[in-house]
Length: 308
Ligand code: ASP
Image (cartoon, rainbow, N blue to C red; front, side, top):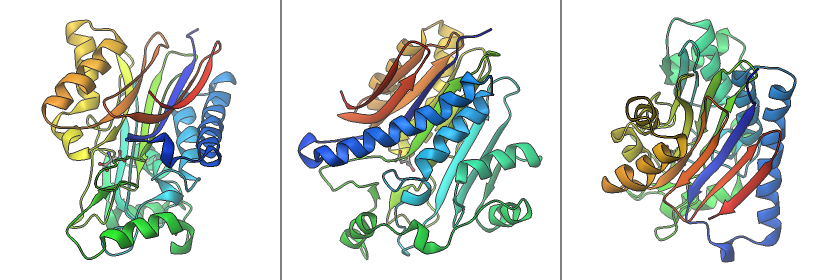
């Protein structure tokens, strides 16, 4: 019987206390707590880590506070294009979707791709056709409308600027969500979901739906979910790099996460963070930004936090 544990994130970045009212801070912490509780309840009942990470990410996708599902940012055309991925570490099966619109829970569609198709990655119209075939729940455009995100978009609309979540030029925040977990059978899973970048165009896709970059799971090493400047996470093959450092160099989970996030990623100019779980149920956070919306839960401890 393995030790069960779960960690989640709601994005990293320059999260300034002065910009976060006590009410807003409480709302973020409550949303993180809800997601942790939903995921951990699955593990406690003997459920799979795959179910746990899906439930936790669904909970974060259903709140407008984070840049995923309901809270997704606006594209250059004023639409929402979402990306998500999920992977499980025993069989190394994975599913991913990109550039999808109107799907209530993108991570659940990624799981359908993993379980109901021969493929790993589906994008755009084809992915939506597949979603329809499998009766994946959808929502009208109004569901994804949020005043705050709309204002962010209006600030940069018509320009060539694209922004990471609710970032202004001097204040970068990444609102992607993710979860990693290990279940009673020692199986590890990881999942990530995002709306990408405000005002993104040309079908831009970040690291979140890319297996090995934004998400990775391997029972022999770890489960990882990332958030940050996606282009750099793709070039750094970040999630897989953490696993490789553990497998080939024998680093601990925390050492491997810190080496990638605080050294290798910084050297190529990437900012953001990640969460990880290893085969013993240890959990790790690592970020090179001022904060990261995050939480973790084991039988001994429950923690949610934002700042360093
Ligand atoms: N990594 C995501 C992307 O580049 C953004 C984020 O983490 O908020 O699409």
